[in-house]
Amino acid sequence: MISFLVALIVSSAIKIADQWGKAVVLRLGRFHSLRGPGLFFIISIIDTVPYWIDIRVIITSFTAEKTLTKDTVPVDVDAVLFWKVLDAKKAALEIAEYKSAINWASQTALRDDLTIHSARHGYATLLYYKTKDLRAVQKQLGHSSLNMTSLYADIMPEENGEIANKILDN
Image (cartoon, rainbow, N blue to C red; front, side, top):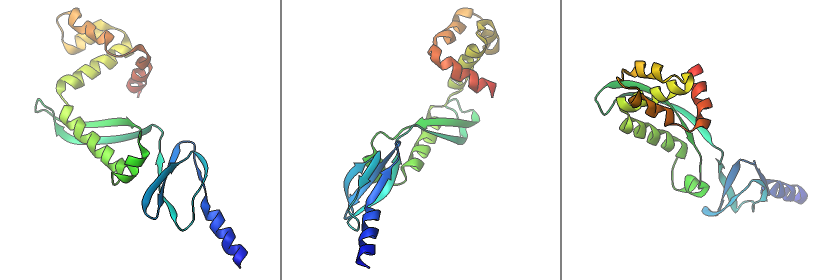
């Protein structure tokens, strides 16, 4: 009976954090340490691991719902957010439901910064990277001068061209 109890305590003390994870260890309800990745031990009964934080880049898609641009034009916007937890301790201990907080903060920021000009600018930049045809972009935007349109050729770094092409292919 005692050997079974000892085996149970020892087995509950062994933890393994994945390569992309951090474990938040609380000792008697207070922050003790961050552990991982890999094998680590806790003191059963005294220590708990209430949070496992993913430290990879996380992709979250969301809809900013119907909103008004700064120019008072109603639009529906879908967006994708790439984010990463940089401080696992703060994510676990200072923010209740940090994933939801990131989603809501992103939607709010998108609503605050959205203008017809920024949407038009983004469209023109993606169109240029897809077609490499400044005249087509000039025609789409209604610019009278190719000089005005040429600024879209230098907006994104070249390595982002592949991402732009994938967005436009979908």
